[in-house]
Length: 168
Image 1: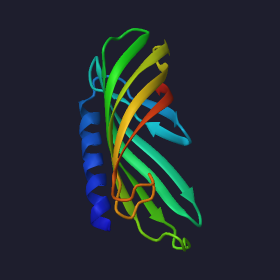
Image 2 (image 1 turned 135 degrees about the vertical axis):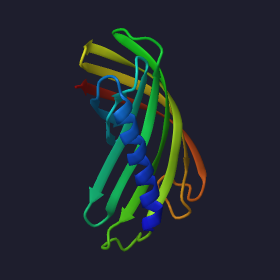
Image 3 (image 1 turned 90 degrees about the vertical axis):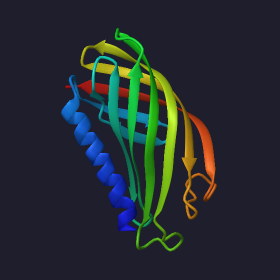
Image 4 (image 1 turned 45 degrees about the vertical axis):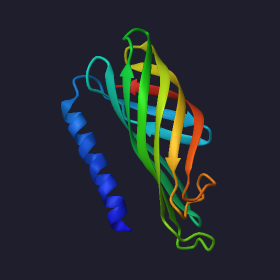
């Protein structure tokens, strides 16, 4: 089990550290809302039109367990004005670790997530933006995962996300 989680975390930290060392612009903090999920993005400008954003999502329930997601979201902006439309890619994993008190489910699961996004950010001022995004997402569920109601299967869904970002 530890090997399954160590490699994705190591790769994530390595890529994030490399991209941070290479950035030429601003670093931001985004709060996102997507359905009933609240996430955090850390957008890092790599140049005039490219952002790489590590993504995090966490849920914890004492007698149920911990459910979290990590991923990378590169965005490619078409123009740099007040309203900045973009195309993005998504890749990550969703991990569920049941509590030792959870009698119904005691198997840790890893679901793979990937997708595409089209969206735009509106910069109210240079260091603050709000955004909206339309997504097409693919998931490959673990055999034991009931997260998407299709254990071991491939799923596709559309989604929307809204965000607010402050840049430092």
